[in-house]
Image (cartoon, rainbow, N blue to C red; front, side):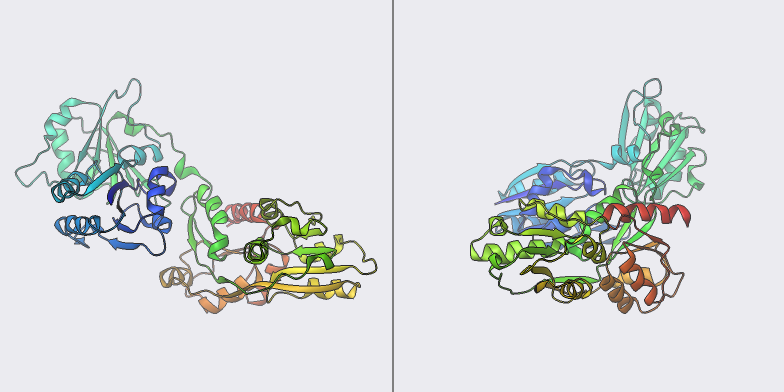
Length: 487
């Protein structure tokens, strides 16, 4: 039984450590902070006990004494307790206080360092904390103490004389007093200051000012405040990404959204996952595959359910398809097939059912086709194949149902507080409109993955601003970039 103090990093989930992710994925109990942890909580097991102890200015979900008690309580009974702390546990994270309490209770503990915002926020703001010819050292200090209260552990005059870079964390509320103290201690009023708010996240903003003007620059919490000559440098990259500060809505099923979400986030977008579809596996029996000449997979989901819930349930694997030819719609589906050790014999140039029909060979006597798909889907493909003389069976391996939306995200969409809506299927469009009802604000830009989805968008009274070409995730991402550039 061990309590792990794990640094969650500054907010960008990509900066979370590998060890931290491994521990979180097997945690029995997670005790987590407010800042820098939200996206990481998805890594915790579904049955883990998750306890919010987050603190915000003027509000604390739990006092520090109560947090210590919770760690002792669960540390004495659970195998793996993860104390997930924003930034690094030992950089103004009160990790030492929590460990001291665990030591007194005789509970085992380990510390997993995290990336501190003292360095990362500056880096994401394009500011090196040291730079040849400008600063050879830096000091990290908390601004949470009120310099005007009469007593303080921080000697601001000494810091002013020490030179170099000063990085102030939790100092936004007291920046006027801090700036005045630094100037009184000898720092020039024109000393550059940069405040990086919500550093490393899609909400990041950077304010550049001077010590003399810092009190009136609009610096807000949570900000890392950098004081010194390096704050005049601007090696900006994070806020220059093409989708930075754009709110993009992904309507795919949660199981399918990760690749698109990751691509958009890497380009700077604030991605709102609003799944319109839930994918539910069905009970099915794989028929005798020896009676078929072709098997057609219309989605990566169909492949996964067919192999994982169908073949493996009967002790079979990919070798069961050795005598069949395989057709798929789209490179994503083909790639998923590759993961099961098979290559597709037919992938149409355009990734829609109509293109598959155009590329499909003419039937010969006795040709039989097994179509693996969702239980309810368009009948364009099966109807056309039967008309051409194929003997076709449909194997439904999953069903799609309307998802339950997050109400806050839904309200943001309804109010028009998003920039782009993305749709990857007709069912996503229909379910989205059922969920949203109507827009109370401006209708966002709409990006569709292909012509069939576009028809559904138009049928529901919306306008397709950009349609992806090719009709896959790469094409959709390119279409989002085009849409943002145009609108």
